[in-house]
Length: 381
Image 1 (cartoon, rainbow, N blue to C red):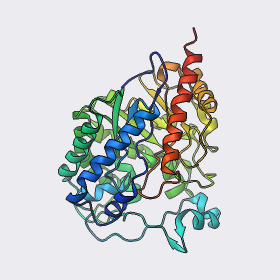
Image 2 (image 1 turned 90 degrees about the horizontal axis):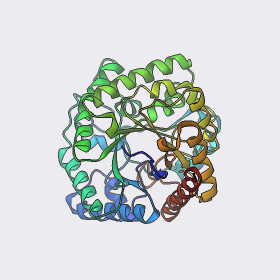
Image 3 (image 1 turned 135 degrees about the horizontal axis):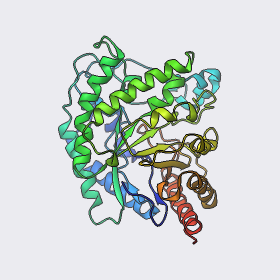
Image 4 (image 1 turned 90 degrees about the vertical axis):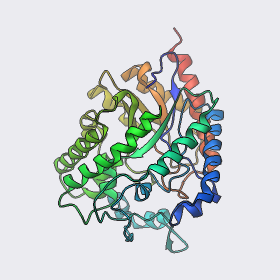
């Protein structure tokens, strides 16, 4: 994993808005062979646009995935049953019902989203063909591109357990460990192809106000520790230098006033066997939490990948704002250990981006310009 040795490197969280002509396949029953070339073209375009914006560490934009977690229904056994409606009901939205109507409905009906099936049987990894296509498409798009590194996101065992319950396993622990053993195959394949692995772990923050809002913090921390144990089981044998994790409080423009404080979970996150830590740091609810790293110092082997661009608004941040945010983190953890990023993905679920696609790339360009400004000051000597 690169460090910002002579300037602040830039990246983002993985997903980017999908082209409209991909949405019917991604939101339907599956991706047909006829769509392969279109996905490949979309990946190539996403990489081109990231490079043009000035991003150093790029992804495939998750062009072939219906959602950051939804894709596992096609890659793991045990998720082939009929999906049942599972409304997204975080505690902050429940306090303000009007925001739910604005965020999640259109013309009086719930907005289309990929189905989230429950687990209904034994779990094993069977998604080799789809994974191979994903790896091949990304490798082809990267050919001759001037990037520092490339990463691919994959869902964590805990996030699957948070979003997709089980009818098959007797306990959460059993379910988590079965997921870990299966997802390990995908993790190793990504790293084996030379890419960085990013594991998406909203369960470690969003999980608090989604599933444990009315429970004591200690209970949530105990469950989060179990999720981390399962994740480390899945990461066993993978060099932590090849792994970064993304932890977030939910990529939706809600009030977020029930979000767990970073200081209440940071010690747990440090226990993950990954040397890159991606966290929200630009939105109004979490921008102040750079100070948590003064109280709980970043371990020496880890790199901080803070969000300095918001992923839920169409404001294009001024590069000077971006630079100031970067410099705050650099003063606390050291300039070499900061890689500037975005709070979350711009396309966490296909077709549900809050940000207009062209604006998403304009925001990435502002991120790159802000990193240049910060670098000029941080390396002024």
